Image 1 (cartoon, rainbow, N blue to C red):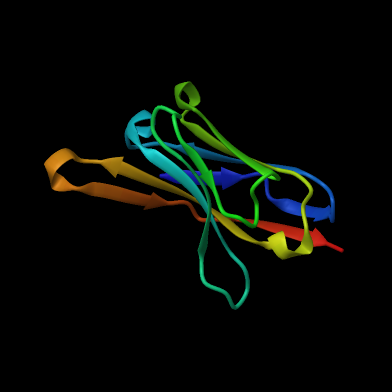
Image 2: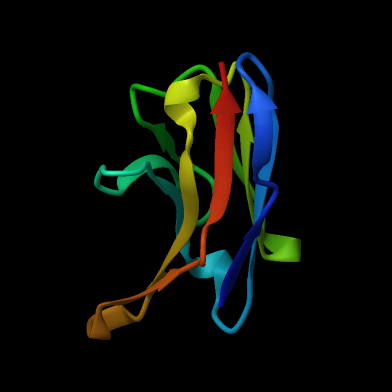
Length: 119
């Protein structure tokens, strides 16, 4: 299970910090990501962080403004968002990909948290 929090309404140029708490799977062994979906658009990958926190990747639209991080001791994923723009308005989803060895991977999704940026 993944439970997001931290969404809300902020003005353009503001900041928000999203959190996602995982349970029921091996969080520390999972690759974690944040996705978002704006009204009328497809869900898109925003940022990813691998298990072990050796690699972080960002979409071009958020690079330099958003920071993904994780706390494995607390089974929590974060997304620090700054310099927010109206185009960042979307529902943000937490995603986990747990490796199952030769059986492939299991994927989990959170329920989403709404982020709204006013101009």
